[in-house]
Length: 387
Ligand code: ADP
Ligand code: MG
Image: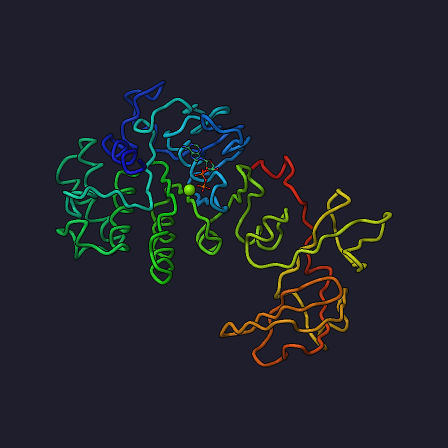
């Protein structure tokens, strides 16, 4: 179904000839990049109760590499399809700059979508595939050749120009699909898990290609992924989604080091989450433990997130703000280091340690400083959703 959408979208001029509203017959007006906004957007699919997307407010800046990150079913693809125009929001509006494009069909949006399934035309060679959007918008032949060559060079597939898609590897096909997405210089490129079918090494290689390409051409990317490593590596900003809601929007550093909800803390990187309760106005307890904490949410129940690498072990833990005595329940060898599962009072904590330093069953003191822990909410607040 997706490839049908892609084909019908690709069968139309992409990002070159807008023909609605005041922009009619003035394609140059699309040339300047504009922010993309989702305002109060919800989507309830027919025959379902729970909204796939609920009350989304997003603003994506021109030239930004923006990722939608979340587990399967969190509403990422639905959000992307509403940006592309393949789905109509049940409520809310989509804007490009000041123009309401909620009811503008996909082929009239200056948008190109790249899917995991590549969706190259099987009967066209590489050069023809990449030139297609330009041919459709009536760009002169000579210019098509120059621009196709330019973009094939950017994605480093110049030696395959005469090959058919089935003669290419997955990584090469994805490079061609990228060149085709960018060649007509759309305002917005939407990518739905485009690297999902590639093996890890190729995926990491393509992450670098994608990131450099996006920075070079300066076109706004909205990138959907369930892979937090991918989102952290490439994005300017990330929106973290769960159950159709955005939990947090921020730079990779911000969402990793200052998560706002328990979900974000857990989904972005590994962490220890301690369920906490405020008792009186100064004390915070987690189970049987009394903890020293920094700033906390206004709710009386919250979670404390402590990254494994923030835990100090043995002698190093002695003067930490919070100190617990425990023992090593499990040690999982990970090559460069070891992940320890430490049972301490009522908590099971994950820590990182040098290989061979701590034996399974041995006692170990574990501690962390107030500054290295982040208090997070159980659920997102309304403010957290405003980008
Ligand atoms: P993601 O891309 O994050 O995996 P989706 O946007 O595909 O999430 O799906 C969000 C929710 O909407 C899921 O619960 C999914 O089952 C549901 N959904 C997606 N597409 C449809 C559809 N065409 N009809 C009914 N439900 C759908
Ligand atoms: Mg999806």
